[in-house]
Length: 58
Image (cartoon, rainbow, N blue to C red; front, side, top):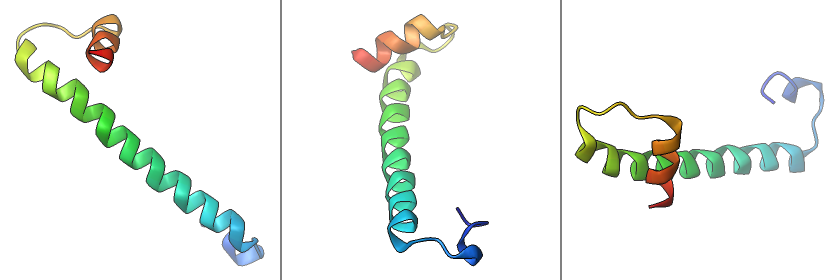
């Protein structure tokens, strides 16, 4: 989006991209927090994708 701004982008597209960026950032922080909370207790074990999914759900 930054590269497109000089060429005349509608304001709603800029606002939407900022909102999506903030929303995704907050979601990823929440997700990483859930994984970290469980993962820190599982010290020494390898984390597989299946286990990560279980940690996210639990």
